[in-house]
Length: 245
Ligand SMILES: NC(=O)c1ccc[n+]([C@@H]2O[C@H](COP(=O)([O-])OP(=O)(O)OC[C@H]3O[C@@H](n4cnc5c(N)ncnc54)[C@H](OP(=O)(O)O)[C@@H]3O)[C@@H](O)[C@H]2O)c1
Image 1 (cartoon, protein in one colour):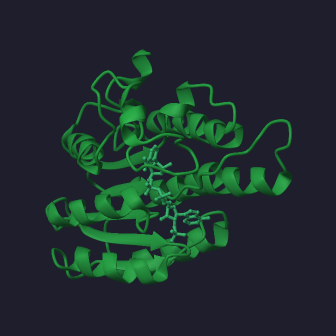
Image 2 (cartoon, rainbow, N blue to C red; image 1 turned 90 degrees about the horizontal axis):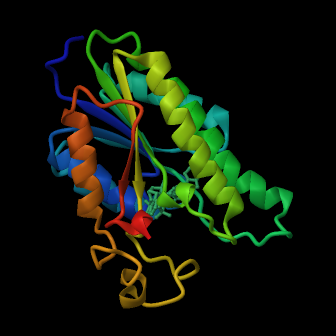
């Protein structure tokens, strides 16, 4: 195994609205992509076709990241197919509102097991492979600017994303210098009808750069991190200045 073969990326939540755009863009940039989906099998077949148009050896697998067995199984399949891991993007995530003081245990478990536990065990499995490789590899977690905001109706979600930002730093320190670990925290990119109570124009009023994000804005940040050799343990907020408010 050397650092000169075709690069391989493992992304969870490749069936997501943003996750799928990231998967296709990485393929366009030469990465062989192995991605996971949970419920969106049909949509994932279409995404796999789009990815394979650039890197035909790319593959996908079902994985419920809230179950450690599923994560281990996905990595077993991955190592059976590919002999290197250059980039891991744990992107799978749940998102729904939860009102205090009525958050239920199933709501908590759904959000925290997917977003925090799932991300942790995905990173751990990925790091086990990466730490043995004779070249620098990278992990990019997907968090959210809400880790730094106080959203009254989303406590389990925002707490899970804040915790992933913390894990990003711990992994960066433990696995330096051969694994660079950073996080991208998007502002609003895809408009979620449950979360956003107004049209895009309304949302843009709170954003100094006067627009919501595009998947391309996030992809640009990912492409920066995969090239950078001197950035680790950082959270890059890609949010048009929203946190300046
Ligand atoms: N899009 C935005 O505006 C935005 C803003 C801030 C942060 N982010 C973050 O950016 C990342 C990508 O966002 P996105 O737009 O792609 O999200 P999305 O459209 O909501 O998709 C969520 C993804 O996570 C997967 N998923 C959910 N629960 C899962 C579970 N238990 N096991 C495995 N996979 C599971 C879904 O798989 P299935 O569909 O196959 O079930 C889907 O691929 C996420 O981490 C998100 O929190 C996005």
